[in-house]
Length: 62
Image (cartoon, rainbow, N blue to C red; front, side):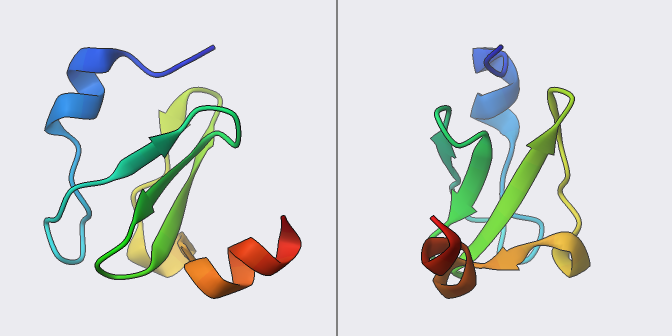
């Protein structure tokens, strides 16, 4: 199931308030400014900075 488009329009990175890229196939939101990946669990974005994965680490796992 994908995230609601209205929700995606208002979500921003909690660290820099920048735009997020939604990767529906991986079920994550990515902030390219902060290089952080936020997981989506049970259709709920986990927008906690301390729970985010650095983009470099996430890409190595993929």
